[in-house]
Image 1 (tube, one colour):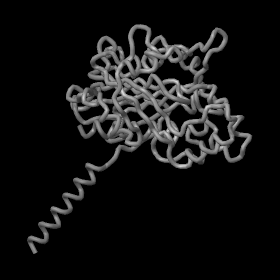
Image 2 (cartoon, helix red, strand yellow):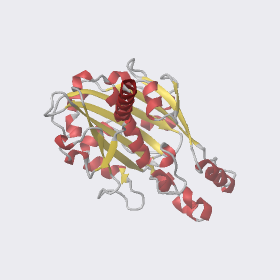
Image 3 (tube, helix red, strand yellow):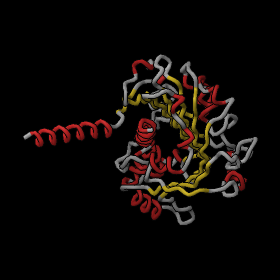
Length: 335
């Protein structure tokens, strides 16, 4: 009897401990991350906000015109653009490539001092594989980076350096194959397109650079987060070339000491995706064919199509941002 009771207690303890360890972060939507006091952020809770209901957002797409975003939010433009001086590219002397942005931001509490957390352990391919296993990666060098060698992509080139030449940076080429109904829809769309037009790929391929944020930029990050406490680390991924739809992307994670708790840290994560308006404007072309109405680019991007599925890019940007940020929070919590 005593052995039986002991076994039951051990089993109960294992079940309880395992359940606690496996508990995922819960996501709580808020109007703006900065509007929530850090004291109100619950353990294992991600507070999340994106701009779909922002006064600047286009009612048809949920995206904000790049110029409006850059003009009204200078701190975000400085830290979340591909590089601070980035502007909408001019394709020729008369045509400017107009962009719109999707921006998400999140904040969560970590139960240890910020100084005890090391973001350098995430500046690698393994980190990217864990936050989104559906995307496959391979390392590249500066010689492989498209904006470094292709004049047609030179507008995505920083003015003072070449991508991937910093010894502290990790550069990768990544590929994501669309999931669910989207590949079949793309196949049908290609059959209906004029033969002279380039087929729509059933994958997204992109190149990016991952590195730690260094001084003096590290000390300037509170102007972005709006949190007045010491910044101990920053990690950024700059997506500087994409094969379709997207012009550039940015992920920025900022780690700060909790303002009032010595044994806690606050992490703020930003995701920004800049989309080409000429792709969004193809809506009329797809709307004319009933079966292709589910492939309207803006609806697919924002997760409003019946073709959206899964948790990665096929789900649309809002769900993708949520799942990616939750994965980052889980990784940091386990550190």
